[in-house]
Length: 183
Image (cartoon, rainbow, N blue to C red; front, side, top):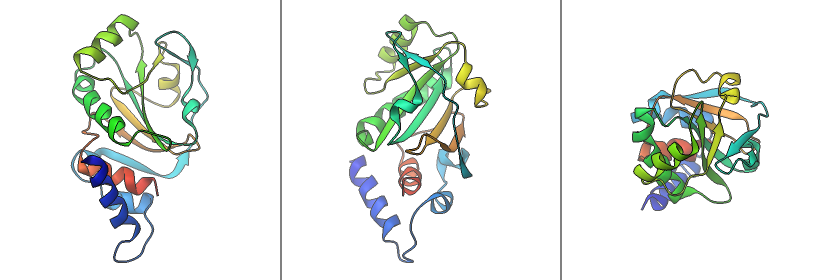
């Protein structure tokens, strides 16, 4: 159902009545609902290359997802709004995830692996990868001051938008904004 909605929104944005191409300017006009909190940058911002770890301690980085659009969510096991938001991110990944789009989570600060696994199990999250930023090195460098914070990254790995606080990421409003940004 959401894929169909996304396709309809994509088509409307791409072939709209005025013929204008979608993009950041179009995405700004679509900010409604929780997406009103999304700040779309006038210029893409590069991210520092900081090594993270997955749940098996393998080194990972957000650059592992270059070549696709990424919704990167910074969260913690103790964060109550994160518990509400995470299932919406899981549904977004289930609907849109693939070669051109991914949702990636970054557990920031002290989050024990068993606690992360328990959090995901209780929230019934099954589609999302987990990266860990145990010393908040990346979070500090990019100005994550509270949780949750979600970044939208372009295929070059640059931040094009940021939302502070929780949001319903599988809502029609989020789908419309993401669809416009990805054009």
